[in-house]
Length: 423
Image (cartoon, rainbow, N blue to C red; front, side, top):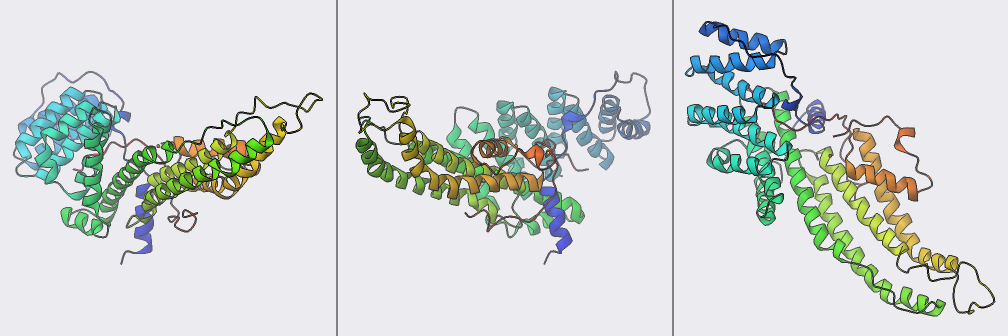
């Protein structure tokens, strides 16, 4: 059984995206002076150590050409790919990655798959989805033979690429394939330990964290799709009655309750789907937990907001005058009638769900557009809510069942999601 400290370490890993190669600063012009073979390798490492990345990439590429059959040449070529990506030289990075696959794909397919995935993931981060899809497609057999962490992340990138293209159904199929690979998550740690026997516990934890983030993202994306098919399609019935209290009462006690039942059932079904994130093993990834909590909160909030706008109030008189029929409610009276229907949903469902969304965001110091939406809605609709800036420091930005299944506490920061290539 994993130790408590190991579990906490994994939670820390889950909340932190991998370091972005794009944050690497561009250095001076490449070196022109010739160097000896051994010196090229030493020079590449030294230049990288002092953040002269452009010069380091040149030296490491030269080292790889001079020592293709040695471990240092292979390592240098993999490192050169990462540096080229960080320098924005994507074409050169893809060329070097292709060289790596040709030279080492048959003898070190794990590392070759890691290099290919790094390039594809980088393209995805830049929203170059067609390029990301093409890279993964060309190297599909290599990816399929890779360890579970690479396969899960690659399926997520491939799925996202298809979702942004003309064949979204293929994208959802890729996401479902990732979920099938993951299963119930019970064997994930053992599979990674077997695939990387020479890595320490910290390195394996990072791989588990990246794998869980990929699975969590896939779950949320699939739930988002089904949300659009079910909840979003349950629009409230149009009011066609007269501006009388009897007609309004009839509408609120006949057509509206039937719609409310359908809408509530659709929301609860989707909520169960999002809650699957909380059941992930070995631990739920905070990024996906917050995204799912935000989606659940928004479902209930949209429901409450729709109830507040069932009947256009513009046609009702602001005040009652002598010419106003006694059967016609004032605008305030009509609004009060709508509020009687809305209040239980707002107070018992929407506000608690939105509060849970914000509390998770504050706890993990992680925010995205959904959690920001939760806070904005609460500030407007919940008198007890104050802006986050008055409650806690701003988190570092990335992007009923929740209380009982909340994941353990973790501290998180955010960077981008480009996976580093392990030496």
